[in-house]
Image (cartoon, rainbow, N blue to C red):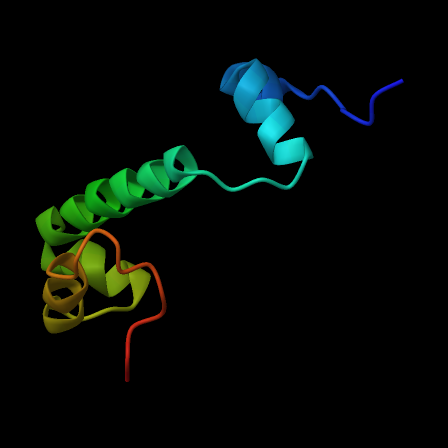
Amino acid sequence: MSGFVITPGSLRQGGRAASRKAAGGNTWLDWLGQALRAVTTRRYLAEMDDRMLKDIGITRMDASQEASRAPWDFGPRPM
């Protein structure tokens, strides 16, 4: 019997992704997905108006700095 657990999230990911995650693996596809999410969320951040930025507690300068980071730069921002 395998140690895999099927969840709704793993069904959406597909068989290989689910088994890879269950096995604890980290592949270039995982990295690529993370980079694409970073690019997308940073683009959304750059498009927010001042009211929206104030609601989430960051300044326009913070948003601009975050949006200008490289796609592979996932770590916390240097202070």
